[in-house]
Length: 342
Image 1 (spheres, one colour):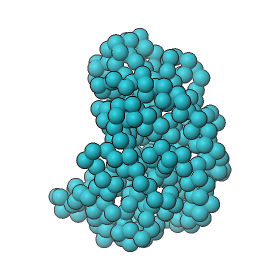
Image 2 (image 1 turned 120 degrees about the vertical axis):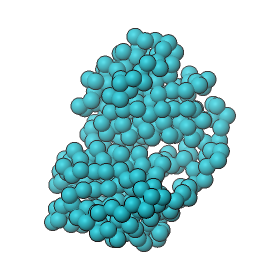
Image 3 (image 1 turned 135 degrees about the vertical axis):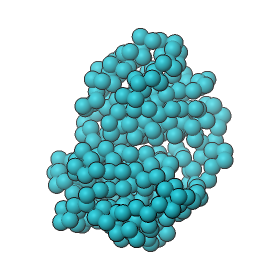
Image 4 (image 1 turned 90 degrees about the vertical axis):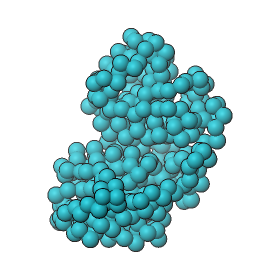
């Protein structure tokens, strides 16, 4: 897992060189015949990448985006009317039966289908009209790291090209360097893992684009460190679950600069007043200054692309916490690389 985290700058360099031309071609199709709806279908970490895609595509392209419930098709035999829509399947292996089945039914229902996968010869790829490969190389750790960030990159570069947003497109070229700089957070991640080693449970929260990062952080903490972690939008967190928080309760806040910064800074301060054990992942000095323990990632990334960089910090934290808690982050108990659910 740690080695694959370290590979992510090189993965993003390959994607910039090799996937951008494919994304430009798909973006031209989008502009020629914009869909009225996009449906993302995924499971696990890929579902968290899809959640990021939903925020980004709705905000950038103005199209409604749905996150599919594959069981509607696989268990309940639902027939969805998808003509005029895009169905985008995300799966590192391309072999998750429920994701493949939903994409197949989407194509049969008249949708244009796209596979985002690390295996361009997989069943998911064969069922789709177009394939956007992740070019991540073999991922041996059960906990997805480099394929997750690669999925974020593919979704964001396609959206930027479809929107003809030159600022956002060019920012992708700088992402490999930003992700490489984020790897320097490892010492702080190891120190925070030492402080949280005995935690019985925690909450991870964020808002906007980085709600997906909070979801992915909670998943990694469960997989790699066996720490019960609940991921919540910070807006939803304040609508009841905050009652859980008392003195010493661990809360990890993902707080990038941008539209949600002031809200998240207020949340951090409120948690501090309650005596919570608050840690922050951020590049914002004002937010980091509110806590004793922060994972400071490099600044300068547009808010829309901060999840690519912030993911590195939560991956390293989860890895080191797993090691401290005596787990094997590469081989979580009861899990396999490909989960076959229909």
